[in-house]
Image 1 (cartoon, helix red, strand yellow):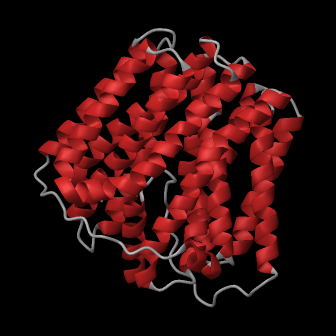
Image 2: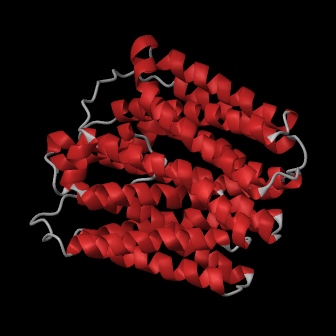
Length: 408
């Protein structure tokens, strides 16, 4: 691991700064929007817009990179992100924010693809697994740090919008000045949706549902907190707990997944998520218990994402994994677009508790579908390796992880 850090620290530092900047703006908009009188459903559109842009970026950014190169795309998208971040407090209108969120989602998607391809290019076959594990951990730590930064500022002013802009600008320095040649970008021939669904119905449906859970959970956390009347520090603590839970429980779940039927584990974790979210919906909880709920929520959804990819890959050849991962991530992103919208609609109908009710419904749907699929066919004879993956990673990072694990 020390060799990996010495070799890749400029790229990892840049990624961490990017995640801090992105994490601050994602939570800040929900809080500031509530202060400006935006309705819950208007804020849900703002939050959903990011995932629409991110989905578009995952589709078009690779082609942009192939045409003009990594450095130009990275610099152009980074400059756009910095500009949008400082425009938020100047254009206090939910429609303008929605448009800017589409733009910033597109740009961050392209940035992640660029950074991940660079990082993958620095690794050898012997160090690729450690490098990508370090990348996933840096992503999570950056988001956790962003929530701490959020709690120290005043969301009604300009500083918390300017600081992420500065952090994103600073993130380019270690990446662009690193003594690492820009990598090539290979075209991936995708599998059809019909073929991937026939191969793994649970993988496809599960990725669609977890996309809704992930976006509804993280995208609407600050909106829920503002509606619930929490302080800025409490909202930041809740958001940080979501990511801490995902960081802590990812690997214990991975250990189990290599030893039991993954569908049973998916069923069990989704059922736990549904019960916990239903309890949070029905029972008024003190804030200390809410933090426990956040830890369990984050610790459920992040491993579920990795489990669904691992389960799907149990039915694929090594050559099919990269193209299949691109389709699965598209389904996850498509579900993410509607997560904040549905969550916001429920919060408009039943109040703040609609946040947890929405998550309970999606977890219950996943548990029910997993149980039905277990009755339709036997588990695969052999398990592929479980890879700890973040839902915010691009298909490039996911494909690199799967390619590495398939060689072991």
